[in-house]
Picture (cartoon, rainbow, N blue to C red):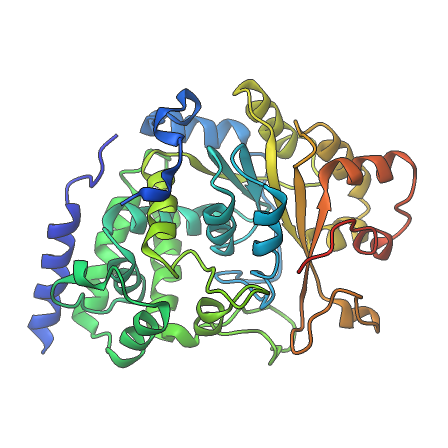
Length: 386
């Protein structure tokens, strides 16, 4: 697989610099390089795998371009303490997955979501990883900003400094169009069959990032805006419960791990319903066939909707079929104020709560009939997050 299809980092920096002018290592790769289970997947294998694992799509009433979970990093230190590492990662939603991937360092990752839009969004992110050499280039491409001179000198900069650069640098129409065209062109080289409508939707997602900048927020359809939803700026600057910057863009090493996984076609976007009969079960079979177990399964608060839609039982059977060991965990988000009480693990000042449960404990409790409602699920977590 090519590293930088027909552009490469110098081409990207030059193209964006010219557009701007017209208007004005992988020390953390651990043992993956020598693990035969971490080899490069060809573009055709990537596309085939995504299509074979996917099932019917569905509707959900949010754009979900970014997370609404301010607490998303609160589990990072506990994941490290528990030794949750390697294996296969499964997650839902947008780019908060990359922060979990950077922490867990899986050999392969599967991003599953009922919305086909999420697959298209992850193809957009993948294209940006492949086109960008480092974090500042990635953020400039995402937000249509000019790349600074000597972008490699930004490798040691703190995330606050990268955020400040994006905030202080304007996107011009010419540069925005150049960024949109570069990403749209790269997306179409990734192997998955896309029609004109798919490409237009990817351009729309990218335009939303460019137009809103770091003020971008999670949006719902048909519901009142929630003022507690964080901006993308807030999400980037969040910390774990040890006070550490743990977003995947907080360090060059974390970014390059995710970039390496993306370049090797080992972050597979999948369309599917967690409570359906195909996608999640097929992912589990694929993981088992590769001789791996699930290290972390990030469900966000999807279980709430599965209980509501009466598909939780099928979901739990799917989870039971996943290959696992004693270190395998479920990461979930809980928005407890919807139920009129505060979860015991809630952190002051946070609307959401991040929870951890051993995957084996979930299966045990399900088989014991302990899940009569959603609160039973979120109150059953065995691991104290700290």
